[in-house]
Length: 288
Length: 288
Image 1 (tube, rainbow over the protein chains, first blue to last red):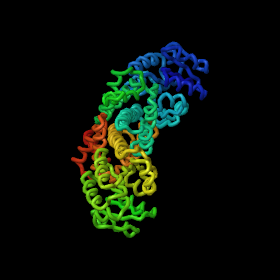
Image 2 (cartoon, rainbow over the protein chains, first blue to last red):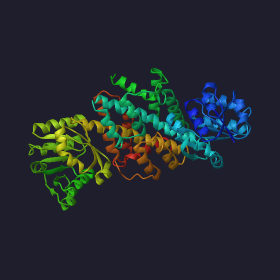
Image 3 (cartoon, each protein chain N blue to C red):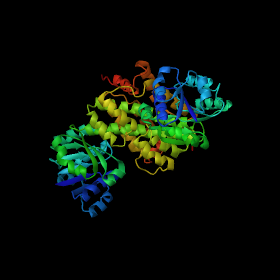
Image 4 (cartoon, chains in turn yellow, cyan):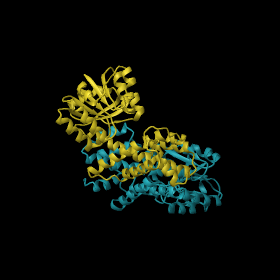
């Protein structure tokens, strides 16, 4: 079985690396040929068009950013792919992934929806959480592929789109917790407290979140090296709010977080680390 | 050394139990004599006035609810207590505890500010987190008392009020995370997802918070037995927002959570479990 992959950005590149390491026969396509050089050295085949990818692979993994990118990638691949399975790894929202599934089905191609959590570090280490959804037999058939880059591969639902919904809920919480962490640290600074003590106390108290625990350390060190960008955080929080809206659920905190990321993307470089949302709080509080 | 305690509600009663179990010589006062019956059987002495408590004890622990209660308790105790230390265990806000410290100092009594986290279960088990603040020597002198009911006794600052500030930051996060958990579960229900799967996935993903992990299980089981009340959650979130406001820090998410608890306290019985804030979300989403 030949595994194709389209979209070799930071996350996709690491996923492909893990698949090659696990012995999968890989064929790759990316709009930037240089993104594939080292993967070809590691044993993968590179092709120069989506059509070539579609005709070479039995299963194709997709990991691009925007819905527009997904649409054009699918249009290319489905010109030559008329059987097999597409596995989406990206976060693009329930409605959008259902739209892609429809197009795939019309071409005779099945689909698994498998958004991931764990960021670039999880992708590199092969320890992503994979929120897989789709029919049982399709999931079972492809589980080994997912196991190559995920340490927690969870079959979250039988319908394509369930994976997106669970991911959206996770991102709703991530966005809210990121802003709450910024809010908490700004209060702590203005109260003149020792930040390390506040951090240690909260990490062992009811107020702890995984984002607070993880990003709090960077806030103390004023380390804003990019782990996830403001623009991707905005995209994901926006998808979360739209998911809530589409099913008629209120997103009072989610939308507040989204507006904060929207502001931050306008004021600061969009590819800066998402933690820079704290700068909005600091400006409002009159801190440097 | 004789240890006094005023305020034997659910939390205070468990703290006193742990102190008696650790061999401390205790003298107690509560406005409800029946709250002390079993503690007297366990070896404590009960007195029938705050004045009697103030003259009998070298150190007095305070654990009442409102600032008004604190003021009247202090007025009674300080009639007869002119040396020793008051240890506050309650959450009442930085400004208020500084006001109490001033009154204590005028009477020749020193003060430690030691709000706790961990709820009624932590109090019963003697595993509270104690956010102690005050001068080094005063903290060291009384640490053994705090160790009797706290498993994490942290000296968070040298100033009375620092403990309140750290607790307020913790409560800001708790309030926001409680509403975020309600928001997330409501989206999950409206999306028709399996709640246990969503819970398990998020608990192993970046969206996890200690409140989500702890309260999510009760939401799945629809278990609304009282662990912390809506009115206490409102009080604590309000203190958190006022703390932020007093130092000029924005509390965008905190105030949203406060308004939600304020609404919930108006609509539902105020002594219901704080998790019932989810009912606001469910009503807005048209769920039962």
